[in-house]
Amino acid sequence: MTLLRDEDLAAAFDHASRSYDGLVAANPGYHGQLRRSARRLGLPDGGAGLRVLDLGCGTGASTAALATVLPGAEITAVDASAGMLERAARKPWRDGVTFVRAPAERLAEAGVRGPFDAVFAAYLFRNVTDPDAVLTAVRDVLAPRGRLAVHEYALSGRAVDRAVWTGVCRGLVLPVATLLGDGRLYRHLWRSVVEFDTADRFAARVRAAGLRDVRVLPLPGWQTGITHTVVARRPGTAADGGR
Image (tube, rainbow, N blue to C red; front, top):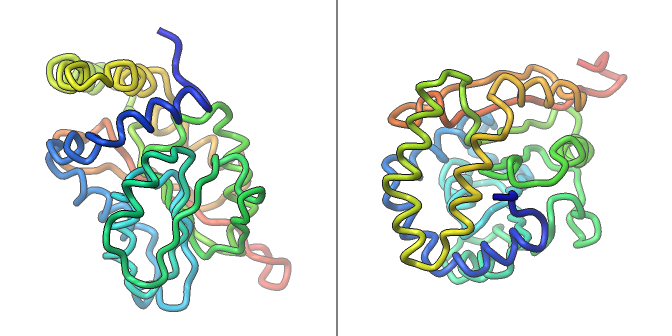
C-alpha cells in the first residue's frame, strides 16, 4: 500500500470525519494524553495573552486539550481537511478559538502568520510529505523562545512496541474502520506509524531545523513506547545572546 498524501489524504479524512470522534473515544486515555502534551508546552499563567497555533487540529480534540490547559490563550486551529474542520467548528468553543483551513505547508497563503508563542502539533508530522519543510515553517512562525510540542505516534524503536501497535491496528482499529468504509485511511494510519521516524530520529529532525532544548517525553498507558511528546523551543534573539 502506498501512503496517502496531500489531497488524497485530506479527502480520506473528509470521508472519515463523520465517525472519527467515535473511534478515538474508544482509545483509552486519548484525550487525557493530549492534555498532558499540551501541559508540556510549559506556558505560564494559563496562556494569558499568548498566541498558540494548533497545527493539524482535525475534529478539534487537540484544540479542546489546548483550550482546557490554556484557558487564557488565543488559539488558531488549522487543518487541511474541510470535513474535519466542519466537525470541529460545530462544537461549542470559548472566545479566542479560530479555525482555518490550510495545509501545514501553506499557512501564509491562508492568512496564518506568526509570531506564535507556541505551536502544538498532534498526529501531524507522519502525515506530511516533507516533515523537514513543515518543521522549518513551524520555526519561522514561532516567536523567539517560542515553544513547540509535537504529540505523535513515533515508535521507540523496540520490536515489542511495533508489535503492540500492529496488533491493536489489525485486531481492532482496521476491522471497525473497514466496516465504516474508512479502511483505506486506517491502513494508512497503521503503515504511516511503522514507516515514520522513531521518536529519537524525529527529535534529531527537530534539532536540525534549528530548534533547541529538544526532549523526548514518553506517555503513559498502553501507548508507552508508541506515542511520545517531543518538546523544543526556538532560540532567542541576538539581544539575549540567542539563548
